[in-house]
Structure formats: structure tokens, C-alpha cells
Length: 360
Image 1 (cartoon, helix red, strand yellow):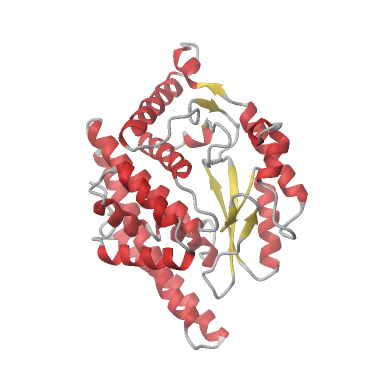
Image 2 (cartoon, rainbow, N blue to C red):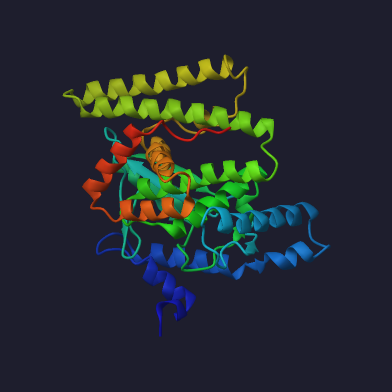
């Protein structure tokens, strides 16, 4: 019996089996149950699109997903399989809640290690209350902690991932981009390197979406404006992270590092307010990032993981003359390098390039 023919519950437990001492089996059983419920909720998109009794807006958006998916297979070299050919309504705002943690005076993520997928910089839960309990336990151990809702994730083609209701809360552009992002994880995945995997998928999402929108009639002005603002906000956060890295690596007492940490986050808030009240003319779309929870090291982790290596992948894409199959193959070769050599090569690519691809 092959692994893919195992009963779903057993297969999920096998895939998510922790390395010795990593955690309790109860967590993995809960993950397996949540994934099993997700798979059970799937229904074919073609049937929904053709059913005139279903919500017209849902039908329109799912048709767009199918059109964009076919385009991505042809133009971006993304896999043509059963992923995102079904739809599942989970009846909740997010599919999982990820728990990120980092030491009080470090930007290194707390690692969560699994047998097949390697170590990840986060740990996901299908139930928010379970994620919050995990976060509270880490706080009591002295870690900075962040709990973030996630609209989609990839099972790396072990299962046919569905489009989820949790992916429908944003614009068509975000929805299409998420499909590109999650399919990219099925093209290249490197064990124990979350930043590499997420930055690569994020680049595929952003560059692929630019090309898709250009082919389908261009972008809406409000979308282009939002993307410019989002990139500016990310730049602020990454600049803060860079300064904090210098603080934590300096020959200072822990108390001095704590004071400097506080000043850096205050500076970030001030820089954001100046951007919001100045060039953005009062646009407050990123206010919740500051108001929902106090910024800390863990809250910076998603930005580093998703954006850290995008300039390097943009440079590599240019080196391959924008040829997607060649680019994916170059990324595979890069991912196969030993970790230290891979990191050095990523730095070289970032320095050689002209920065990340920008939104038109």
C-alpha cells in the first residue's frame, strides 16, 4: 500500500509526525482531524459555477479562479493537478491560526520540527482557542509571541487543496495571487528553510499577478495604489527589523537592548503615522497592525519570512530573462545547495539585482 492510499487520518498523522520530543501526539491528531474536515467539505467548482441556484458572486469568483489557474499552468509553469478545482466553506474566517514566537532579544524564530516537511518558523492550529493557548504557554516561557489567521495553506500536493471561503474575504487580485502562491509551494519546497519557501512563493505570487493582470486588461487604479502602500509599509517594518538585528547583536546589556527595542518600535509607529498622515492623505488601512496587539519580535517574523529573499528571486528571474520554466529550475538548483552556500548565493543575488519587482 502506497502512502497516498493510506486512510486520510493515518496519512495526516504520518505526514505531521513530530521529531522525537517535539510535541504531543494530541496536537497532531487535532491537525489531522481539521484537515480531514476540510477535505470532506470539498465540492467541485465546475458544479458550483454551473448551478444557477448558488450565489452569483461566488460563482463569478470561482470562475475567475479557474480561468486564472489555467492561465498560470500555461504561462507561469505552475502544476496542473486537482488542487484548487474544488471549493470548501469552513464556516470560519481563517483556515488555521499560526503561532510565531521569538526570544525577547532575538529575531530568530522558534522552530517547530516535523518528520517530512522539516522545521517551520510557525505552528498552525485549526482552532483559534488552541493557538491562543499555545501562545500563552510560550509567553510564560519568556518568548515574544504572535498569533495570525491564515486564509490558505498548501499540503504540497499530498492532497488536492481546495479553494476556501477564507480566501474570499479580499479582492479578486488577492484571491488570484493566493492561488499562484500556494501552487508555487508545489513546484519547489526546501526542508528547514521557511524564509526561502515563502519568499519564493511570494515572488511567484506578485510577479505572476502582474503578468496575469497585464494579460487580462490591466490593473485597477485602487489596486495599484493599495499595492504601493503595502510595499511602503513592508519597507518600514523590514527597516525596523534590520535596526533591531543590529541592536540584538551589539555588545550591550540586556536592559540596554530592551530600551533600544522599545525605541525602535516607537520609531516604527511614528514613521507609519507620518506616512499615513502625509503621502497617504489619511489612509489608515494598516492601523490595525498597531492597535490589535503591541508590536514585538514575533510580529516581525512573517515579514521576514515572506519578503526577506524576494529581491534575490527577482534578480534570479531577471537572470533567466523572465522565462518561468528556467526560473523554477534555477530555484530548484538553488534550493538543493547546502544551507550556508544557499544563503550566500541569495545574498549575492540580492546585491546583484535591482531590488524586488515593483507593482506597475
